[in-house]
Image (tube, rainbow, N blue to C red; front, side, top):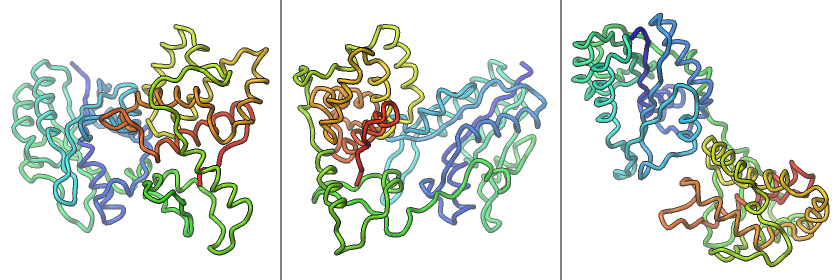
Length: 359
């Protein structure tokens, strides 16, 4: 087939980019525009091979192979297929397991079935050498793309480089169109938490206002503290019958909307704040018009607590996302805070209700 395919070893691409841009291989130090990056890869592959793109395979590791927020976004993009291996901690760092084996098996299968005439690899792993050699025997032209190495260091297997038919460099200018250094939190920004609770995520902390200086507590600060405690309040973990006159989202949702919601949820990153906003926006949108004002008024009176029945439904909805729940389908206190803060943010955006502070 006169088409091209791209294999992306995300560990190599993002690790090498982090090393180049920050001097540290930690991917957490990067901010990645995944939609922009995928478009760049597609355009480059089609330009260099002269063939239309069949598909981009994105190989990465994840704890227990549970898709992370970036994987959830990537796998619903056109022409992108995500394949996950295991991500395990070894001493003080993480290692991918099974990613190279998956790439090797997929490469040989596609070459054997003549799915493409050109395959580009973004990787440095020498374990793929047998797969590259086999693909060439099936008539596939192999393109190897290297991420520009920091300080002239070498970051690809020498044997893999020698075996490739074509070699290209992904330079700093090309990378930084979609990959940049993450902005650090502004000095002085912090989150006060109840003793014994984990600190909220860096993303949540970065969204908070700079607090008053120590020793200058104001009534507003004390009000924020009280509301923060309320945001940690939990309903019963099981199903709760409506006892507060507030309808559940489930009762406002048609069977057709259930299907649409499930489709949309596939593209959610799974960040608790975003999940809470989405839930709230759907609830407001589906309120019966003749009762909407009264129901929103009741909700506002409960602020910053989410009414018990609706809060329980929000928590059940959140357990759909593997990035929020743990193995026992439980939700941490930190994620509950962010879910409820996201809920109030969604209410504010959709209906003008007050937004709960997240400090």
